[in-house]
Length: 193
Image (cartoon, rainbow, N blue to C red; front, side):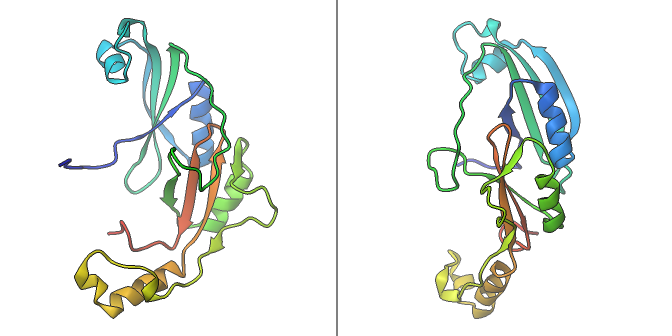
C-alpha cells in the first residue's frame, strides 16, 4: 500500500521556460522558487525513462509556487535534448485516456473569470459568449452515496452535501500548453479541513 504524504508538484513540459514562467506568473500569480538550468543528471534521466544514453539528456527545470494555502508547486521543464514531440489536441471534458483537469478552489469566482478572460493564451472550455461560472443545481440525498455507512445513514450529513453541491460555481479553462484547469467556489466538503 502507498502511504501518501502530500501532493508533490504538477509537471508541465514547455518549449520556452522563460515564456511559460511569465505566463503562469500572470495567470495564477505563481512565484519562481528554484531553477536548474541545463540539468544533466544521469539519475534524473534514468528515472524519467531515458535509460539509453542518459548522459545526453539536457533539461532546464523551474519550480513555481502557486499562492494557495497548500503552496502547490508547478514544475516547468524545457527539454533541450532530446526534443519531444509537440502534441496538439483539443481536449473536451469527456475525453478519456488523459488527465481531465486540475481543480483549484477560489474565493472570488467572478473576479477569477474576468482575470482569465483578460489573460492572453487562455481559452474557456466553451467559446460562447454565454459561457460563465455556472451554479450547480441542487441535488437530492438519493442521488449520491457515502461509502462510509455511518455517514450514509445520517440524513443531516446527506442534506449538508446537497446544500453544498447547490452552492458550487465553477468554470474550465485551457491554457496555452493544453492544460485544462477548473476554478471552483463554494465546494466545502470533499478534501476540506
